Image (cartoon, rainbow, N blue to C red; front, side, top):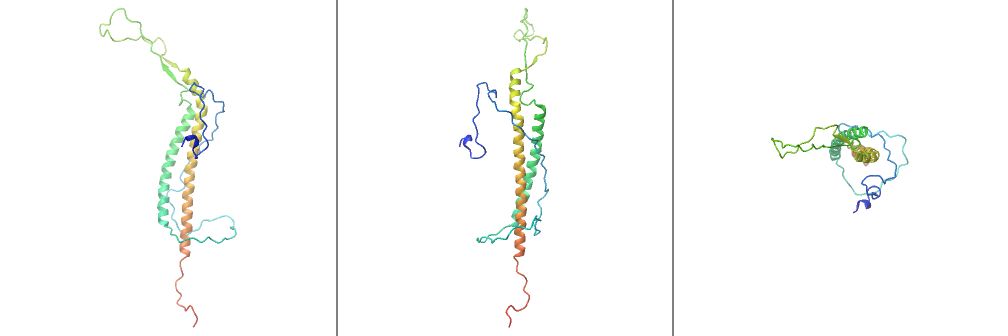
Length: 219
């Protein structure tokens, strides 16, 4: 499947080139970007799944009859183990996200990553000596610099000034998508805890009461 025909994400438009290798032919304005959020772990460890129902707002709607389905079993212990595994993975992702965010924000603040301050070094060859150097007659010699050898590279700097305004917001937007994905995983973990609580409560409430010792049918 070609990238532009992928069913995941928006339709990709081929990049137009004006033959110069830069974005000089792009007339679209640079994208905007919000400040990437700071992520943190709400739960350090997975909460114990018990029968305490979560508090909800409102009185609820009209009860409906549940659909008939075949019997199934739920292993609440496996759900708790999965929550612990996902929390460990989330903690690692949050740590890596914060490190990446610091790198992106540093690049955005400096504006030197893509060659905005590019330079090149110019070597000035020395005029060939009239007499052969007795130490090594075949070794080329260079003159002492008469001025700074490091000069600004106008070509790279010009391209960077066109590229940067598009790339820096783009990096922050990608960072925002990473934060959204991690936050969505956190929501999934909370829903797992909620589902485990419902199953545990239903299991406890389905237990038959102990026999009272009285006759069921009157004699």
